[in-house]
Length: 177
Image (cartoon, rainbow, N blue to C red):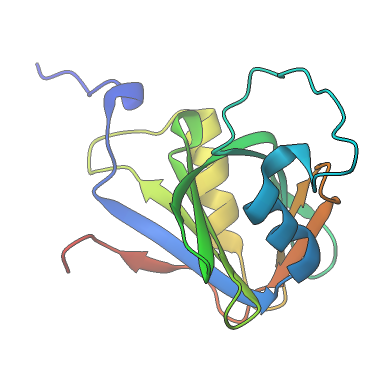
């Protein structure tokens, strides 16, 4: 008799992907990209004590809502790591293991746009996702045009409030295909 694989050890091979773009909240994101979480330098420079967070980490509150305002998915302590930073853009990536959810947030300073992509991993055949994974997958699967993905970042550079309205539902995707 064969045993079902442990859902926590499964790495998704197929994903549901949803993406959206919006006008970038340019001032606060530019300041954050240039000066980090400590904010714009002032004269005289205030003494700061470290908070133990890496400067290449962005702590984000993410809320995904349906067009009628119903909360579909929330992550109040999402950590995004800086994947790339140039004068023209900053790319932040995070992965929530329990939800099999990847979040990509791009600040495109050249075009003054914010891009977001959510990837929810689908379980392979024969694997039953646990409750947390299943909830995230169902939330992404239910997304439709008019729904929003909003990010909030508290920062000494000015709080960042970035909302993205979806124009299409999630689509299936497999890397390499």
